[in-house]
Length: 453
Image 1 (cartoon, rainbow, N blue to C red):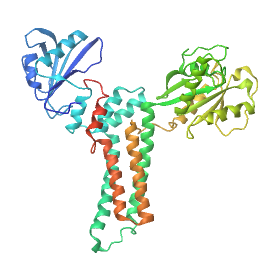
Image 2 (cartoon, rainbow, N blue to C red):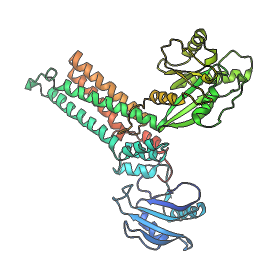
Image 3 (cartoon, helix red, strand yellow):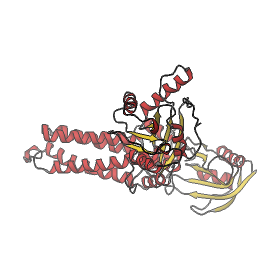
Image 4 (cartoon, one colour):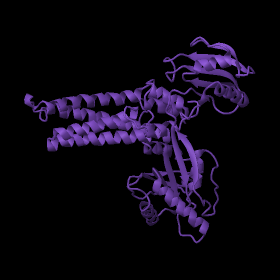
């Protein structure tokens, strides 16, 4: 990623392909010079101006609307020119080349947003929200991304950081001026404020986890014995005939992936080969891949043929599954094919169980509700903002440090160590908004953006 703001950058800001309108965006110190070269004049700032777009040889390329945004009143904080012409790829490419010939260079992915961040127009969390808003997979995700872009996420972070700063000032002042003889470790003020900060971080953590699920979704693996109806369940949940369904056991040989949006939550469903002893090398490879998928899953649906239910059979499947999954991975037992039998007696199990028919869709809505709860999204999404993996990690570390601070206060009465734990908590929270961020992290974040954004 090029970090210099002395260059003038340019890029096509609209999506690839044909469209009624296509936009070229230019930002940097040569913006006015480029406007003169292509338009023959510099448009009045913030006034939409009809103009002919020409290259440096005077050849007419297109005509449309030119908009100049004068620094610092622009998205990037620099002079910005937008050329809104016809949305044909060839036309846009010719106009783009004309801006390059006039002195700009092609923008790196996310470089416009990066300049907005570097020029204090937005913070890092807001910059990431731009990319998340563009990539939103549901209405709820778009709403959450917009809340982050508007600064709701950053404000909650900053409010907690300010509380940490105030507490640090109190602690460090007491350490630096011992002659005041204030027993600050026992006056109750620090513990009260610390408990308040811990509670606020807990709430922030919960919202962030919900936001991460809205952004990335969860991975759910369907497993079970051959012919239990796993592929039928995948088709029922996705609403499409994604998987081949036959009465022949072992039809599924590979891991089939399907994504559904369940009340705004992306759920990545993996249908796996039935786990059994097999001498078929192809089926053996499918079983191997099924086991690998189960080990990484965020949730597992164990599908059992309701017509073949026995306590011994179920327990043997659960034992085999337990040896594969992580201890924290939730499991839902799904008794399938209930349409084929009049009555099913579910054995006593500690895990949640549901009765469904993948064929008739009986019980499917109850399963979807359970999946929503499994994703941790049974509560209202009002006030949730999108969060990335790095946000969750930073909040988790900040949470750990404030808990350590409480230990230093209550168990060891160590004022200096208490102050250090608070400083570390503040640092990790501030990384989210970019107050303390390495250039390597910035490069990684903005390189994932669209070119032209």
